[in-house]
Length: 194
Image 1: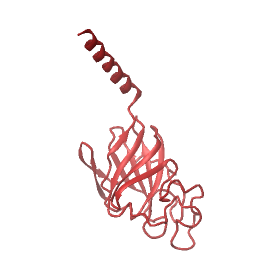
Image 2 (image 1 turned 180 degrees about the vertical axis):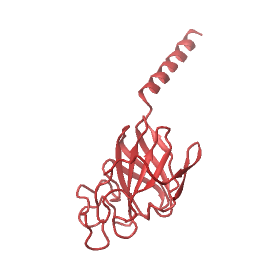
Image 3 (image 1 turned 90 degrees about the horizontal axis):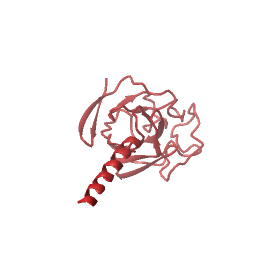
């Protein structure tokens, strides 16, 4: 069983890579991959379980389809990831139209025809990237992955690469916003009376 290390904003957590409740067909069939190569499942406590589901890169070399499954109760707006050259985009992203996503000839599945979704060609629908270098970056989901929802994108390098990211950013729940608002209202009311 493979192990991936995923540091979170509040510390480090070890993630076991194995079976998960990943939703089938989170990623489209592209090139040599029939579905995602890697599934990142955001659990109810906002930890991430990473599961390698398919070792065959969609481009026939090293590029990976990554699916995100939101099993939490909040909307996920971004995930921070890092790993050896995973953001070293070289022009064969899964969101590239035509045959740009495949290096080897005769893949069983066509390239995705709905892209590109961003300037890199590696984003999926509603996703985009900000990366500080080829090893570190953030994947953004617009308008966010709702509870029970999924998203996909692609990265460079094997799914077995040491992906070390995982700071999960969320949209505050409506109840949290109401609690914050009532607290601020009480604060201003008390201050006004003083």
